[in-house]
Figure 1 (cartoon, rainbow, N blue to C red):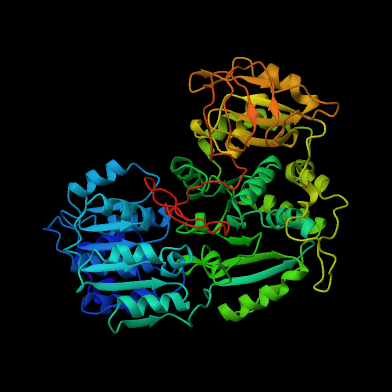
Figure 2: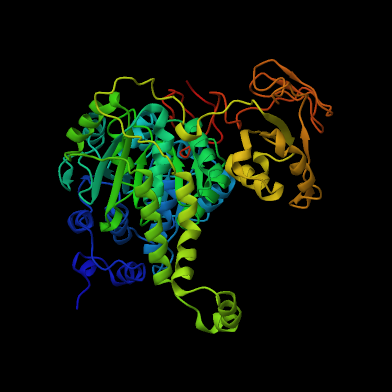
Amino acid sequence: MINPFSKLGISDDVVNAVKDLGFENPTPIQEQSIPVLLEGNNDFVGLAQTGTGKTAAFGLPLLELIDFKSNKPQALILCPTRELCLQITSDIKNFSKNISGANVVAVYGGANIMQQLREIRNGVQIVVATPGRMLDIIGRKAIDFSNVKFVVLDEADEMLNMGFQEDINDILSTTPDDKKTWLFSATMPPEVRRIAKNYMDQPVELTMGTKNTGNVNIEHEYYIVRARDKYAALKRIVDFNPEIFAVVFCKTKLDTQDVAEHLIKDGYNADALHGDLSQQQRDKVMQRFRDRNMQLLIATDVAARGIDVNNVTHVINYSLPDEIESYTHRSGRTGRAGKTGISICIVNSKEIGKIRQIERIIGKQFTKAELPTGFDVCEKQLFALVHKVHNVEVNENQIEQYMPRIMDEFAELSKDEVIKRFASLEFNRFLEYYKNAPDLNSSADDRGERGERGERGERSHRGSEGYTRLFINLGSVDDFTRGDLLSFVCNNGKISGKSIGKIDLKGVYSFFEVENATVESLFNNFKGVEFNNRGVRIEKTAESDGGGRSRGGSGGGRREGGSYGGGRREGGGERRSYSGGGGGRREGGNSSGGGGGFRDFSGRSREDRGGRREGGNDRKRRS
């Protein structure tokens, strides 16, 4: 029987690689675009939602059209983010594993540029790049695009949304006029239409479904709550879906950190992904998510671009995007490769109009859902546990040796009593938490809202009253995120995450608050604790006032005392003195606070709607 990909004109070497990856049948976008692109004679515009297999749609034809006996760049693929760049590179390398001499190089900011230059000098046929770093390399005259035959603009709408129009112009000006340009996009705003007009000659246009519509495999729901109940609503949605594996979208970096931190404190397996993390930190967070060692990934729009993770069950919009079109990209993180998914919006009554706008753009109607009651959550969790116990795989050889002792332990209990106790292990925890739980549902005509940045609900923002501020000699240079530091302190200090207050992550040190009652035990438990063969120090940063509030907290220009010498200055304008600091040295940027400089995946982007633009890792910021 002839393989469906072979029928499209793909060679046996590539077909076998695709089969090894588990792909048996082409997706609709692949089925219709591959024969057109294999001709190699036309410019092309392909409109299809994320998760429909666009990488293979352009990657497989490229492998058929490129001369791999030549080590000169013949194809350039531009994409908006580092994550997407790495994902595309990985996919094409997998597709080409049976092709002798095939070389694919990923070029993106935040990584060692010298290593990327070495890979280019060693010979490459396909370059996958983010615009900022690509311009850096072009500026160094380190690459020759005179032999480029094909340019692919992937996620074109997002590249324009992130402010890459000028960069794309500069990059394409270095490529031959007779090249073929293939443009792929999930939506078709006027800016993308303008690209097609400026860079293409009578392109073949292929639209899967209706332009700008959402994936048909995704259900769309919204919950109306009061702004102050958003965090409580998020937790209730998660608790009602025991097997949830989700991306939660927030509007700003600070919100992602805040929500992730609160979830971790409340015992959820979560972490944040945003532009202030180093590449190494981002890779670590994403690897945990891909390996399903994390249940909830809290992310900003820009940071989440290029997340190609299978079997994401839910996308939760904790905040609606500023750009309505971005909702299509968000929801596309689930329902990928033919799977089904659910996209949820947590909104207040003032945002119903925005839901209606999204409905018109994606051509699908949202379902207004009701948040489950506390009783509903407890019931769902109970039967999820029962189902898990019923279906657990028993390792007969290993468990057999323990069975006599187990039976002795349960000898006085009847079968019914044993079952009740196992069921109660998880049930009691939720029963206690949701006892007297309020109804969080609000109505569309409830106008008593106080805005987006209200309280967090059941665990709202806490002040420092009753907390002591501590110094720890670990920070972002140790590859810590705020979530990592929280886990490290809780595990080694043997305290609950609910005892931790604010966390202020710095470069080579950090600050965190703990409840006054736990300070002494924390110090005792941290005696002798090491990290990477280095002793970990925890000390009080300053005298505390009556309520445990440390003087000189985070206000600009305040002084904090303590036993450390140095006088290092921080980006926030606050003076502190700690050991090991060189006098007068400036630190900036890695703190979670402030609106200062930040990097993002692409090396040159916009995030939090701040309007700032970044160059690649070696370029100066331009306003």
